[in-house]
Image (cartoon, rainbow, N blue to C red):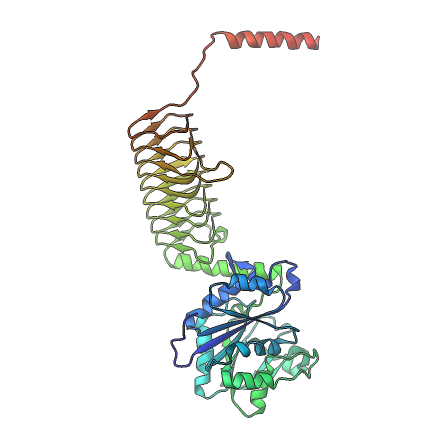
Length: 455
């Protein structure tokens, strides 16, 4: 994470020690993907835009999975064992941050949509003299959320868990998201003062605010939308989060100048990039790593992942672009064509029923229906190079490694195993044998034989 641009640096503690039993999965809960990216990385990517000096993840069960997912990202993983509540979890990060002085934000790995702007507002709320700032929201269904009892100016009078709340307190609709920020000196002191005298016998993170209020310090609440603090604890909630993320991303794509014919049928990855005047027909799926330039047409039922599409490209319908596919300006990949780790040069065409893998296809080349690049011998991958303006006839097999020269023609039905020179015609077929009348005699004989058996 980069150093905060603010005068006061920011450290983030992400709580991710829960077992996630409702997921019923071997994968850690916070690593389940939304739009192709683990929800934990959604969170870190978003709040990282604020400028974060230090990041500590508090893990428990399957922490090795979290460590692997965070490799090279500069985050430190600490362990909460045993798991005695959210305040106890946050306190496990103290040793990793002993040399840190600044603001400390505590948030949750299964709450992936926390926005950078909200984190800024939360941190800025401390500038007015408050010791602690908490993040609240007003859900349609207050369910079992903890409540925030606050004045009109946002000053918090009381924080109470649902289990411990009175009937009157439960009637309040301002709920606690659990996200909290304080200066490091205050955070550690207040965390260490948290007790477990409550219905669950746990050390609750909201008691940081309660302890600050008891000291006479000012605690403030900053409000945000419910969707931003939605937690994900089950497969159903994961699906709801995916749907909400996709809905926002579709709207963004259209606001940015792309046309989605049936938006609800288009699925984006977290890093999909679309240019202006892009047309996306129904039932298109974008996997991670896709960049689409201006003026591209993507016909229906395409699956595109790890691909780059230049201006004026046309894809589909029913095409599949796999990682490493590069389509240069005005290239065309038609129905039932698969492209993998291959470059289609400017204006090159593979209109239907072809596999182009581990290949370079020159500008203006034409790949006929049924053509395949035979790139794999069961052990290694090999490359096919097709020159500019080459014409590959239908139902041809190009057995790599092989080069087809510029302006060369490969006749339909050829299995090419040796290089083809520039301007050359290559025909690789067995000689046709013609036997006039043979088929008629065959049919007569077989009909007679069948009649004898039936008689």
